[in-house]
Amino acid sequence: MIAILLYLQPNILVMKNLLSVLKINVPDKIFIKDPETSELGKKIIENSIYLIDEVGFESFTFKKLGLKIGSNESSIYRYFESKHKLLLYLTSWYWAWLEYQLVIETFSISDAKEKLEKAILIVTRTVEEDTNFSHINETILYKIIVNESSKSFLTKGVKEENKSGYFEIYKRLVTRIEQMILSIEPSYPFALSLSSTIIEGSLHQHFLQEHFPSITNCGKKISPTIFFTNLVSKTLGFTNE
Amino acid sequence: MIAILLYLQPNILVMKNLLSVLKINVPDKIFIKDPETSELGKKIIENSIYLIDEVGFESFTFKKLGLKIGSNESSIYRYFESKHKLLLYLTSWYWAWLEYQLVIETFSISDAKEKLEKAILIVTRTVEEDTNFSHINETILYKIIVNESSKSFLTKGVKEENKSGYFEIYKRLVTRIEQMILSIEPSYPFALSLSSTIIEGSLHQHFLQEHFPSITNCGKKISPTIFFTNLVSKTLGFTNE
DNA sequence: GCAAATATAATAGTATTGCTATCATAACAA
DNA sequence: TTGTTATGATAGCAATACTATTATATTTGC
Image (cartoon, rainbow over all chains, first blue to last red; front, side, top):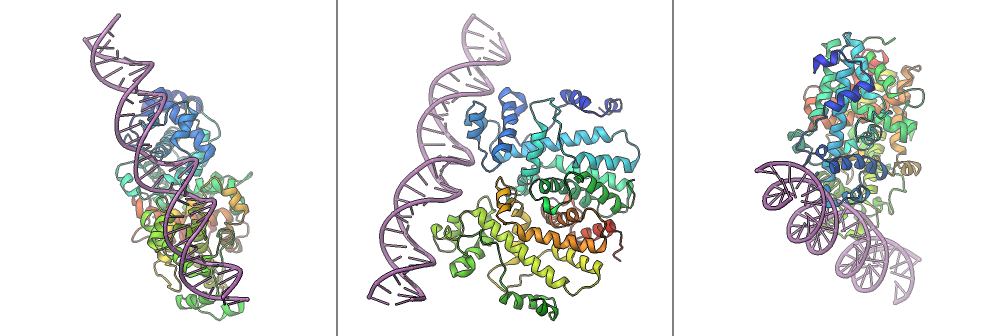
């Protein structure tokens, strides 16, 4: 795979091609039956994204989803044991998708600072264009990540679910950016915290921009990318002009 | 009140005295009947904190709470129209309580940097000692803030609830710290985003410390306070030695 | 092409949730 | 003492979050 990546130009078309071959892998304990293996499964994923966006995760039910896709509640339960597991699936898929972008788009960058800046761009930018290579609408999924993803870990069951490996992809993403930080400033003692702050903090700034504009500078002129790029460059002591 | 504060030493004893006179004010549209005005009301607040901590917000119900306090479900509905409103009450109370501490403990500090550092300490530190001046156990409430407070705004109803003023205290806290940042560096263009990142980011680091220690540097030796103090001093270009 | 396996659909049922409504009683105040 | 207010007890209801069973398609292997 590394060999292939070296020859690829990182753009959406390439993503599309690459991902038509490579499958986004979600920890398989999250589902009962892999939704990627059937038409119904794909319809479940595709439309759960639309429905959660429409009504919010609290009001989302398998019954309503069944109605939307002309299928039965009980059939959906054959894929996911609960709506919480479905949310875990969607968030895992998103982080895996981001990780692919991170790897592809930073792979050929040799300059450590440039590499980190690119990484910050990737994890903080708004997903606006749907790459359209699959049944998953990434633009809408991104809205769900901003509004609902915290609920995937803010539960009484986190500890156990963490042990089951449900958050591995997310954690690997954090450590990837940690490594980029350390390659610039090996003695910086808070690389993990800075990395996790960039990722969660960016989602939070996107949320504020939408719902609490009075407590963020992010808006039309300033993006979370600009804010976090500045924050990181100042913190690690390099200029980004 | 300002006159009084000038003569006070900021410590827990003073807090206790001050708050026995001053009432923490929560936006009054949040409740149907003010729980501070009756014994039952106070029992509801006191024990909702314990129960939410025990079972998590999702499994928390008014029926269970009624059972715990030897009262009736229907009586609790006379105070709060839903458990969501109760969560809003608890989070608002917490932010108001923090704001008091912020005002009291930074009031007499004239040096801008010292003032900001004190403010960061106040909003990022773990609430470990219960001041015990009321029926509210702040230590347990703090755990709820870390684990559940995001759910108070990550809902389909945020926009409306924001219009109703339910988040005023929280927003005012963010702008207070924004002002402290600007008094050090008036040209820094991201003061609001930095402030909101400190507050939410600190809760997130506390959460990670507890549940995902592999993606944070915070733990026994490093606290969120140390991380954010360093982050802010580097970002604003002053040293904190 | 047919049987067997598998996937999906339809229906029913259950305990719990998130309430609302009504009526009774207790406490307290005018 | 009478009225007002607070609380308690009970009932009821539609929706949620499932589980279980049975029926009917669809696919697959031989």
